[in-house]
Image 1 (tube, rainbow, N blue to C red):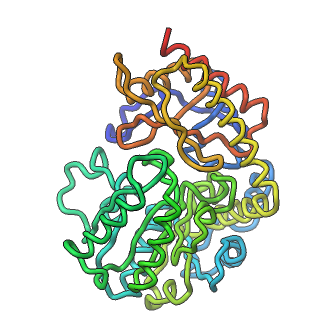
Image 2: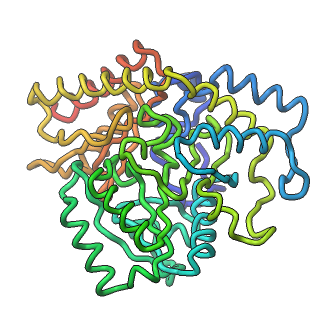
Image 3: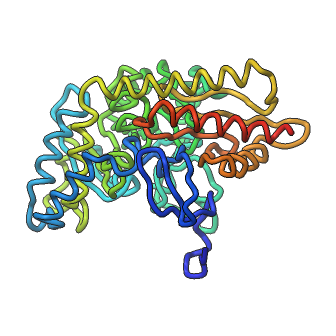
Length: 417
């Protein structure tokens, strides 16, 4: 492949060029078949080219490709925001803005939170990821490679340790860190919002401690702080439920969506309490391509497919397959580098630990290559890139899922050969 005209600052995980795909299977330009456990980094929860999504987009293509909504509205945007108000499981009246990407949703959430509270401070979490645009970038809880060589970033932003049973940080430790932050760094009365992923994506598929999530919601309510849940990767079915925050039994004030929202077309959103979303003056929100008609048609089809009990069945089926395979590998004792199974539902990661011969990151790097050779595409995550994240489409046929896990097992065998 010729990358001579592509910025060398883009990182490429797999040196293959895809030609076409169907559900959980893809083929490269040489005709080689792979099972896709990357899923466009969480974009393809319904797989490549889901027939109902394709049908909806083709039908839309015959009527209207685009209208800039803030100039001339179109029906797709109106219908989708109404559907989202019913699809997102919150108890309050919901208002929504469509965007092109998760990072753009993050930026707009910061705007409305600051305007609503008339405050500037933002609290985010270690190992979190919220995008690559400048304001979103400063929220990320990791320097390399995202914040290097960029100088001062928009702020003020403060970071807390992320408590999870998938890591070493406890609820008590995180609570004390929050208390210290308010006492030493910034008073709660100057904090506009707290942004957190219910399940960290780039951070290694770690599930937020429910006890701490409850405490966070109480702190935000008591101090007039806007609570933002970033569900760009964990939302739209990834955990086996519509949104991961339902596993925590609390409601955010704002929710960020993207990735699988439109099954492969660029679309994202920020939605939440109407009194927050409506605070800016007319024209304060908007975007030329935001809420493109084709993307809206795809998202409407996604919502229809994810409404009902199919989503839970897909999630349970995939969770069971991953858990059974992982248990088999751990019980065998053959793979000393194999660590914790992280995440919740069908959003699962596997930690690779250091051994006498290599670091966890080195083991995982070798695994990615070996797995590609065996016929399955995988994706790393984590601060040290030592956590394997599994993002197979929820619609993956059981036989294909089993084949992919078998390919992964063969790749694991190659690490100990």
